[in-house]
Image (cartoon, rainbow, N blue to C red; front, side, top):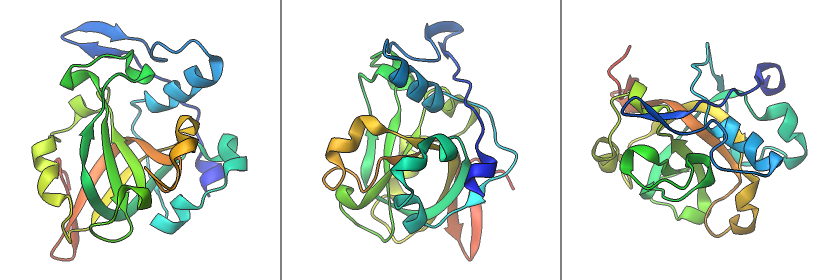
Length: 195
């Protein structure tokens, strides 16, 4: 199903105050990193998502990256640790302002787990203007017993292979996030307030 849902990414520039401040491939010069940044910098809204379990996402194979990256997925878990506002990444031209950087979020299979047990999901500055999300809105969900459903594009961030087992459980990510929902009274509630 993921293979059939794979779509090629079209990275988009980062526009702040109606000015392009970073291109679709960030400031990367190596073709492999440029392709990765194109995947991270897409803004297209999927028509539907394939539901995968947290364990399935964590265990996706590294030898099928070209077949699976770019599929739209939904995964349920818990926000653990904290929301990190990243700075100085090639995907965003090493910019530093809050509206120019990714939010690095830890999604775990059960509440209050360590970052070594997390799948990384990222809200990007190219996508966030389409949503009402704030770090203050996410903060009460972190280290709580509230389930969240994260939907977005599947990416394989090979730049972090050396920290699997210490700073993450896998280099498979949901990046960028396109929808965040919270479990309330047995129903999923979109953080944007959409049905």
